[in-house]
Image 1 (cartoon, helix red, strand yellow):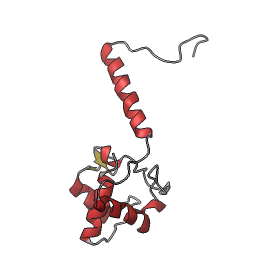
Image 2 (cartoon, rainbow, N blue to C red; image 1 turned 180 degrees about the vertical axis):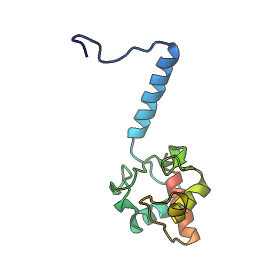
Image 3 (cartoon, rainbow, N blue to C red; image 1 turned 90 degrees about the horizontal axis):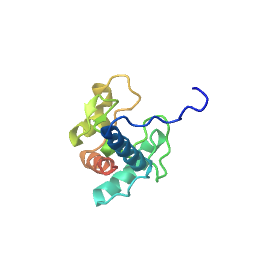
Image 4 (cartoon, helix red, strand yellow; image 1 turned 120 degrees about the vertical axis):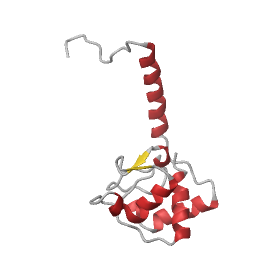
Length: 131
């Protein structure tokens, strides 16, 4: 970069300014820690997340979960897709990702979890609350 050149690029159009502002707002939201569970099912799901070993691979900022093998799940529910764009981020697809991720995206590092339906419901309730 030339000496004295600006370190940022000014927006060319008003729409660019709006997009930059929206991005800064999104970035600020992403920096926040996870919100605590708001339902009994989500609270049970948070306990399951820890006891089932999920925190060994995944981090959730603001909790004891500090894994670094899998993605940070702090704002999982705000994402549109799961598995690096493999599937939409809906309740049913999230359930299938947890129980049969190898069928959804073969070769990924997420193990298939064998959970009772009620425990799976609790875990999904917790994860869907992470916005």
